[in-house]
Length: 163
Length: 188
Image (cartoon, rainbow over all chains, first blue to last red; front, top):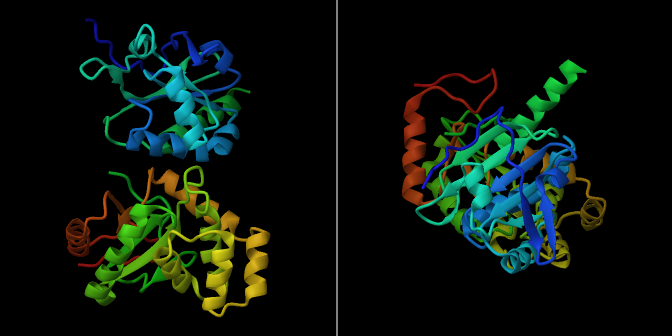
């Protein structure tokens, strides 16, 4: 099986269309009104993931100040995502990379073949669909949000310099 | 390993002196059960180490999963505005299962605070911005969950007593300080 390395800054973010609910899908293009924080995580309900997504939920307004939105991807199915999202009161979409399993994660180099789950990986993608920052965290470690915030800030600085 | 981006200063609630050989900054959430477990451990360390250790408390409420955490933090700040931060901090951790607004008001009475001022502080969220400032400073320093400690500016993961004690001893012999402003004197 071909194992792809984590996509790096400068790469074009691979397009996708994934279910958020049984009858709704969302594509990368739908999500790119501005910068997008794309979070790959191993599983709904696992304690580390819980803390990580909850932290991003707390920071939505701060991400929004940079015009950015958040979406998170795991291989869990839509029903699992719905239950989990409701339980944690998450206010951003959880996308199901369920069938074919992990194909979007693979295209980002964020699939963990030996465990059959997504890696714990972060991407900041600009409005044009170019990856501006990526980070692969040890699977059991919550990567926090400082790297995301710094990436969004440096994008805003670049934007100011160019305009 | 992550470092503390906002040094401990006069803006913080500090038990002990900022000139102590070791300053430990704790990011915590009053409704977090792990913070509740860490509470007596931190107390025991303070008792054991005396003047060697100062402890600063910063708020990191995860309101998404802990619905009372934000107001509990504001309550601690409201008590702090009346000079009783640590008393309220202790009461909150000792009564973690009862942090609803009525309970917070009752604790204000127990601590003989000016109850009207306290209630107004909570109703108008006068201390919400300080709590948020703590939270965002924590995020900047790489805090992703609670409790998270910074011992002389270096992140320490976990709250197991022996590992905390070892980290404190290590920090006290390391000399240079990273968690203070320009006024810091390196110690040996």
